[in-house]
Image (cartoon, rainbow, N blue to C red; front, side, top):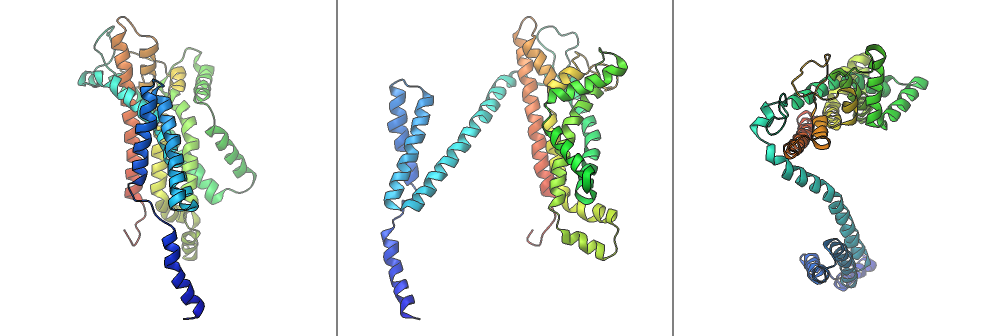
Length: 357
């Protein structure tokens, strides 16, 4: 060992001693002090909870930075400050989500009973009734939209990744990007205008709603599938080609099975994206009080439209309609949550098995 190395090792302990480290409880202690002193003081002064929370967060961030800079040095202090800022941003983003869930749960639990899931609104003008017809309508229209959108989206993504070259591929990519940003009400107007040309302006069909949702769903399926196909290693394709496997069979037997977890997850999320759309269904499907299981014959009820009409155009007395509107919103949120959990489960079950799993 050289003299320089020995000198460096001898200097390391002394350098470590110069830089201290805050105990693990220090950030929590600083936070508690900021809450008591700043937040509590402002609340006692009657300044409001919003100002108290903001002032507490600012004082806590500054205190953590200054104390850490004094004890641990500038690098660790900057790290702690950025951690506080990121955590604060996360908590701010969670506030509206938690608020919406809490509000819908509080107001929707009043009619979350067996009658709501087994009765329709046929002949009901006040209390009672339920959203059975709207739940069935939502499931039928969304399933029909998925049945039309998923094959088109999957095949389009396969073409763009595996075959697409030149102007046609660029044009398809451009139109998919445009469709991604289309407002949902435009999709509803498109479906209504298309069918009004053949059946007149008064037509309302469940299939029209499925077509409108299909317009919104296709670009999501295309984009998610395209990204999943792109991350499949080219070595797998080249190995199949080296064995003399045709390209179509390589896609079918190698590429798609490798990315099936991401594709299934993306498709499920696309369904969850459109199941709560109100504007296109309001225009294309309308509302009815009874059960209609035929999407090609007359109006159908859906949960978003049922909730909307129950809230903006209640009858007399008003309270039963408002309760049904909140319960319909709660059921819709539960459906979206179930679909998101299903997407995670599908991704876990169908993910390619590695040596470490």
